[in-house]
Length: 126
Image (cartoon, rainbow, N blue to C red):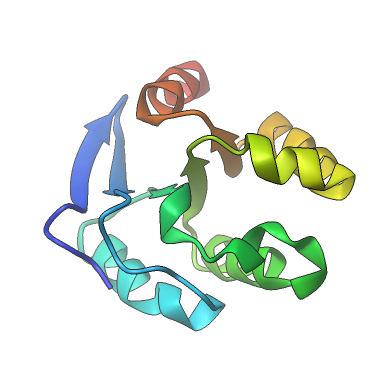
């Protein structure tokens, strides 16, 4: 499920697979397999996914899609940053707001506005 628009970046000593909005939508955890294989082949630490690459179900916590997908990535040693405007999703769910706030306090899963925000966070990890 990688596309020509997906690219490997080096940000503050970390290999990052940046998956832009132009690729196929990930609608279940198994859809991550190709991206994970691509990431492993390039020694990627971080998967940065544009919000548009994720099915709306990802942001509905009761579907368990987000939890299963995140667990899959973390179990295999990949960290995740989701980038994009999440205003509508946050307005619709207090549980999602809490989940994102807690995730952003950690160092493995982030929900951020854009790639430059990811770069800033990575800089502070070093």
